[in-house]
Structure formats: structure tokens, C-alpha cells
Image (cartoon, rainbow, N blue to C red; front, side):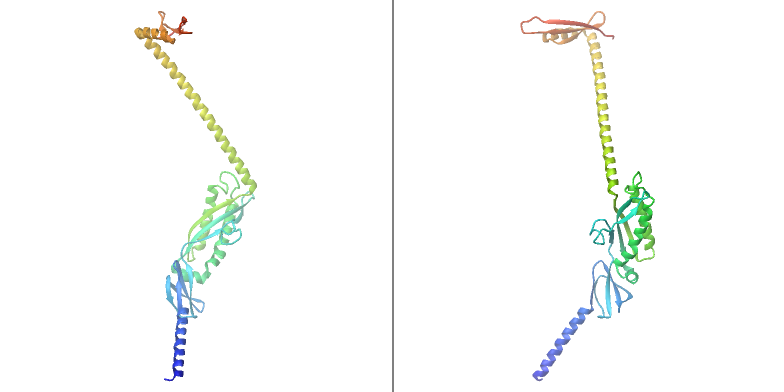
Amino acid sequence: MTSASQKALAVGVGLLLVLSLLTGILAYRQVPEGHAGVEKEWGAVTGTTLDAGAHWKVPIMTTVQGVETRPRTYTMSATEGEGERSRADSITVKTVNGSSVDVDITIRYRINPSEADTFVRDWNQEQQMEARLIRPTIRTVLRDEASSLQTTGVDAIYTQTGRAALEEAALGALRAEFEDEPITLEAVQIRNIDLPDQIDQTLDEKEQAKQQVEVEREKINQEEARAEQKIVQAQADAEAIEIRGAALRQNRVVLQQRYIEALKEGETIYVPTESGGITLTRDVRTGASSPATRTNTTVNVTS
């Protein structure tokens, strides 16, 4: 074999290797985890759904579109960048009072893996379904429901009752829309309700006044408790004095001993009298060498 033939053979082998490599690259299809692969031929859905992993398909003619089958969330929020759009995207509704209220909401759903091909055929992509189905449905149902709710009051739109009413209405509407779709609705959550600034300020002032009333009520309760405690203590002291007097009348030896000790210490003692009363004797000493001054007071005590 001549050198020219060898060169031609080497070039042919090289071209074959390159062509095989390019064919392999073009034929390789990778379906990510948490996705289903929908097979297409010349752009049309074939009805074949592929599991996550590597697949080999005819290049150019056959393509695979990935569809996320994990739970997805669609959020409409007043906070820029928090929802699906870069700008503020909350839903503005009007209450029965005519007040404009911004509602933030999140919808969680998932695409059924076994019906991924149907989803692609009907909606092509998740973003199109969200924009054409979820968003207009939520806007309509929340505005209708909010028109029957008060801005303030017991069951106002911002209360737990009002939130529950909005969530229930949105949940029911989306379930009806998803009934014939390859989509499963998992949850609807009202995340925030933003009232007009003036109403917010009024509610804050009302709450502060309510808290102040509670503070004053607690102070009154504490004062009443202290007063009751003093009454109970006074009654207990009176009963103790009465019991003590009765015990002294029945034990005159003890009484005489207490009288002698009290005279030594300058205390007040209780001395029963012949008439049934008690003499309160106070022995006051002004100094070590000074005579004592004794004061007697008789109190009648009934036994």
C-alpha cells in the first residue's frame, strides 16, 4: 500500500470516527431526575413517554422534551421578584365597601407523569399553562369572592375567616379547571392581604386601644385581689385574737405567768377580769433605773 493510500485510509477512518462521535452526541437524550421525557418526531408528539435517565434516539428527526413532574408552585405576590414575574404581581380585588386590597397567593400543583405527553400536546410548556389557565382563573374567582367580603369587621377579608373564604373559592375553581387536565392540584395558600394604608393605621390604633383596656382591666383585677387578701388577713387576725383570749380565760395559770413575763419585758398582756373582760396592760420602761409606767384597759370579751 502506497503512502498516499495509507493517508487516504487514515483520513477516512478519522472522518468515520468524527461522524460516529457526532451521531452519538446528536442521538443522546438525557431526561433529568424529577422529569418525564416526551418524545417528538419532527416536532409532533408521538405519545411515547420516557423515564428519567439516558436515551438514544434518531438524531434530528426525534427530539425529547422534558416535563417537570415534581410539585411546582406558582406565586403571585406584591413583592417584586418573589412571584413568577420580576415586577409586583399580586391580585388587586375590591371588597363590598369598595376598598382596593392586594392579595398574594401561591398555588402548588404537579403534572401527572403518565400524562406528560398529553400535557405537552395541550399546553406545550408549564409557563404557558400557568399564564393561560391558573392566572386568569385565580384572578376571576378572587375578585368575585372578595366583592362579598367586608374590609373591616369580625369576618373581614384580612381575618382568618376571610382568608379561608378566598382559599376555598380558589381551590374549588382550580379543581374544576383541572378536572379534565393532566394536572393534580395540591394546595392553595393565601400568603398575604395588604389593606390600604389608612385602614391599616385605623386597625393598629384600634388594637392599641384594645390592649390598653386589657392592661387597665388587669390592674383592677390585681387591686381587687389585694383587697380581698387584706380582708381575709384581717378576719384571720380577729379570729386569732378571739381564740387567744378564750384560751387565756381557760388557763389562768398561763395567764399569770405571761403577765409576770410581760411586766419584765414591757409588753402588752391580756388579763381576764372578774366581770369576764380582758385587761390590756402595757408596762413601759423609760430607762434602766426609771420606774415603770403601767397602763390598764379593760375590754369585755364574751366566751
